[in-house]
Length: 178
Image (tube, rainbow, N blue to C red; front, side):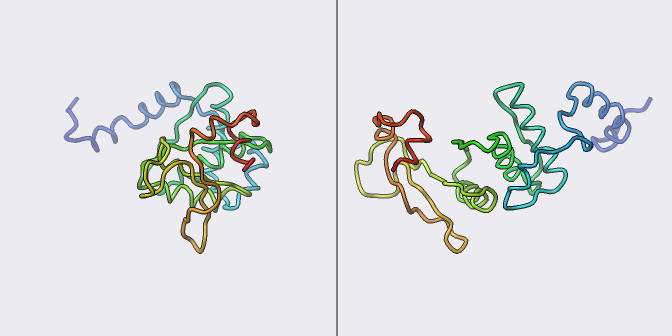
């Protein structure tokens, strides 16, 4: 047998066996024939069938483990899949979710959250310490979508003030009490 010249030759020669091994090692959690949650219909943006499939796979994974990963190429809708999975997993109950994203994607995530989830409130954690000067945004700041732009408007506080509140049982209640 001749050695492949490059990765493309290797994949052409071994794709069926590699695909079968992947499916044996990582069987799908959601199939195309499996019924998706009706909560996907409440999303403000309609996901494509493959995105719904991934969304439901993440939700099923969360029933088995504490985490899940959405790994795909740029433009496949990873943010929509993640937001939709959180919405479906909440099962119509109020929830608080934390998205840790690179700084250059924070605004994009916020915009997509507003465009995807009904009645969502979005907060930026702009810093972990109490401000020592009036320069820049610090603390926890509520943001809104205004004419396609994210603006800081609404609740402004610090994580220290949130921790010191004793009237709320959860962090989610702390944010909604203000």
